[in-house]
Image (cartoon, rainbow, N blue to C red):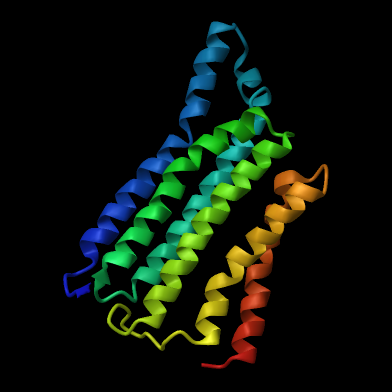
Length: 202
């Protein structure tokens, strides 16, 4: 059952939750300053001794920001929403809210394979939800303004990041030493999207 209610309320709620999650990422760095002061470290040591936490903060900030931009772009096409769309959106928000936890783990255990798999797995779950939202919106004329149905083009374009993250997860679990470096595979999203658009013109 699709409601004709304007989706702005759902979007505003989503934006608020994402804003809180992205803010929580920096709290471990704030705590690190207090810990350094208590241990009489210099201001330079605050940076040098917390580099893994700083790197993972920046990485997760970029991930959440990019996913929010994608979510915003996808929801620009929403004219109405239904219960399945709302539930999948809530699941996506769950993965975003959870991400600060594996981010903190990764900062503390940067070379641990299990931690890397938890981190990549969380991002993968988020990508699965976002891909599902994209397909639901573009495939349902009652939901999306410019819905063209469940075409091969729409489905494949929505699944590119998820497919690359599945590959990154498998490689991180089987190839020693590189762990979350496999997230660089996401840079292939653009070229793969170009090939799909060329193979399946609108």
